[in-house]
Image (cartoon, rainbow, N blue to C red; front, side, top):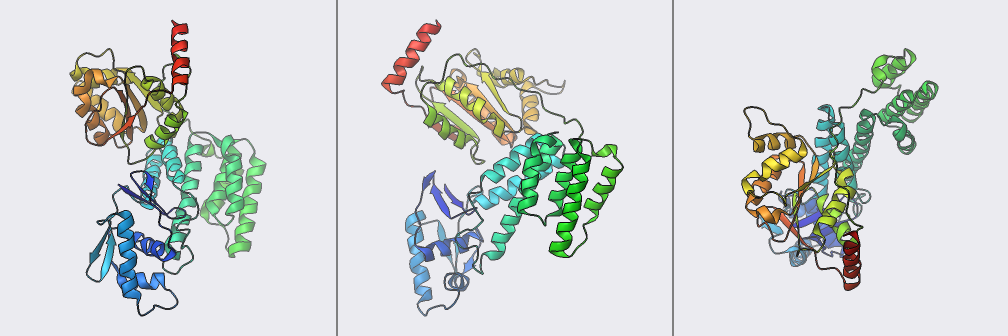
Length: 428
């Protein structure tokens, strides 16, 4: 799959490997197409983007040449000629700006639905897509400036959403420095001053909270010539009256899913672990199989992955050992039992598990699934039913199910293998 990244300088990747597009005019052509993904962009519009000051007589021919160069780099089907225009084919998860928009909107819905853990995880994932100013290569060009400004504004909104989720989780002391920085860097955003004042008030710093509102009011008046809006005024009155509604409610945190303690140190595998971390945090990756021979360290790597990546998921990570399950038809029931899921009288364990997972943002590790590999289609179906579930399975065999990303774990180098053997022998 082709992945286009415009939240920063243009990057293009094909199945994870970079595709180099260096010619400035070819790059501009691709960016002009990516501003309207999967839509026909008239050739005249592309020419104006490439030559904003003066369109040469040879422009039509040159656009055809540039499109041919892009097709050579991206694949013949990446850009389609339609009438007097062109269309770039972008997969549902192929453009980082669209992924950002979706995650930001999902995070806001999660917060309004009373799930600040999920809201926080989604905001952080959305912000992690950014590598610099939007459309950095062409941000000041007439054809791209409005969209670049819109995306940069949404980035600031998302940073605010992240802090709203932190406040909803009762982390007011931790977010004060970030809120001060946000107010300094973007002093004309009224909502930032409100958040700062609220956080300070919840830290029992009422005087500082009122000072922050006063500075915000003065900044807005001097910068925009406007009095603050109702939100800031009402917050000031509530602080002066010490309104009980200002105090943080106790968040309804999900139950902690405990991970087993590792039985040995992690030997080697740091590069593999880093690659797997990036893989499971991609929103287009939902099912990863760590495959390898017995004794290669799949379980240890998967456990370390769960321990180090759980914080990126709103409901953390869970680890389920399947080696003791003999009947493939009981796999979903075993997972439900390990996760503490209880079914109603009208539900099967599988139905209860699907319902429980639907509202969670979870990294679920299933260890030794090769013993019950016939259950693989049922496991794959879980990621279809639960939109924020990511499954990592360890197996000596590939699952061969839809959506599977196979990560082969090669044998350890001889030096690391000897260290691992010695540790295991000592442990016995």
